[in-house]
Amino acid sequence: MVSRGGEGTVNDGPKGYDASVRERLDQADWGKALLVAMKYARAQCWFYNDFLGFEVDADELVQEAIARAYGCGIGAGGKRTFRNWNLDEYPTLEKFLVGIIDSLISQRTVHKEKFPSGPIDETDETEAEAASASTGPDAHALLNAAQRRTPEQIALLSEKISVIREALDALAQEDEDAGMVVLAMEMGEAKPAEVAQSTGLEIKDVYNINKRIGRKLRSILHEIDSEYAKELVS
Amino acid sequence: MSHGLKQADIVFAKALFDVLGDSEGQSTDEIRASLQEDGVDVDSVMERLMRKVKECSQESRLLQLDVAKQRRLESEAGRTALSQRFNEIKRWTMDEVLERIRQLAAPDELNAAFSFRELRSRSEGDLRSLLEDLELAKWKASREK
Image 1 (cartoon, one colour):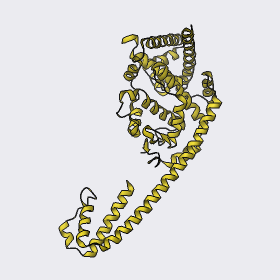
Image 2 (cartoon, helix red, strand yellow; image 1 turned 30 degrees about the horizontal axis):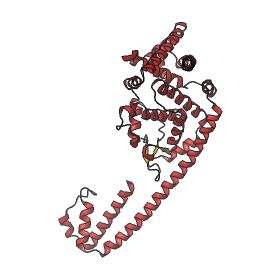
Image 3 (cartoon, chains in turn purple, cyan; image 1 turned 120 degrees about the horizontal axis):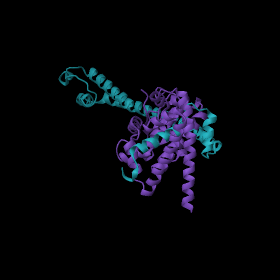
Image 4 (tube, chains in turn brown, orange; image 1 turned 60 degrees about the vertical axis):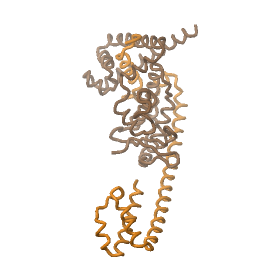
């Protein structure tokens, strides 16, 4: 079993880092992997910052994911942190980077609030990553984080969700398959494989519907944000 | 829930953003286009990230060399210390040899199971040789930590 993560002091380097991972990373195709990681990090930051009020930076997350993959990340207290690339768990570089980004977001947001000195303390990276990867931030923790925002922010958040729902309902009316995918999302399913399984759709159809949902969602969010910005100015 | 916000709303929103950030089944051009739609200067971001990849690769190599160098130094220092200890053992009295064997073979140390009474009946050469084996085992165990 390849270790999930670990640490060392800045001076002695990351003990436990598998040097063969570096060779594999050097030979990997970073072009698509970085685009995938950046797109994923931006969407997650959009949610965590805009909806929940955290301050996480997509660019910084991707850079730290690269550093941890190479065994030269810096964790709490200046300790070296790393993630060894387990191919069984992450068959591609894209998935590996997204996995690291998930852990980082988890550590810096909801889990950090939930366990201020517990398993998400970065001084024990291995335990923290195992915890965050196995459970992820649960819905209750996310709701608690959202409800700590000001009443005005919560009202705006409710309004945004309601506008998004209306738009996606309209999409569902036009297309029955899209309706099934939206319903799966209502149940919290986001992974195309999960959605395909629960809806009985072909995975390539789920990909195509997701693209349409993504385009729709992106335009709604930009519209809401620009209207909100106008209101703030006026 | 207070303020009209429900857990189901957050679960739905999280799933939506997961879909928004998902690239499965998309080509490089499609991913690039969606980032550009969000106002990202993709070329500049990619240039910065590729530079980070290169820097991390180099830093990782240097760290690995440092780790190897430190291990080599520790190993050399350990060998020297062990050799000095063997020379000392040659000069020790039998009581000193037995005392050190007791220390090293205590359950908390190396968990060796043998009777101390029987030790006294062994020859001096056997005991010194046994102690050297124990010192060597201790040194090897400390290197593996």
